[in-house]
Length: 122
Image (cartoon, rainbow, N blue to C red):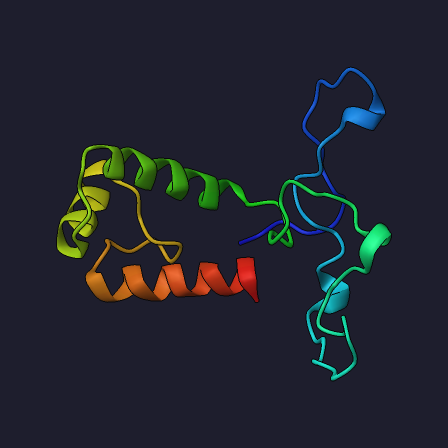
């Protein structure tokens, strides 16, 4: 679902120094990190080595489906629809199918968001 590979940037920017990364390219190196007992061992970056990245926890750029789902859910939530059965019904009314091409159910909604969460947060 997620696109990987070349890091994309938001454009236009006044200069290349103003480009904003669409995801954090440094997360992959720390996916299997183990906690240590030394001071600061639980940190991904040390002090001055840290580069501020807008998308701190996003390891890849969202794909077209993920963006469409996010936009649709944002629209549903903006209508003050928050309860699971109502969200599922609204997704089906909008005509957006699951990644497997099925109609939404409460179960596959929870499974889908769980899977997308694993892609986003490991």
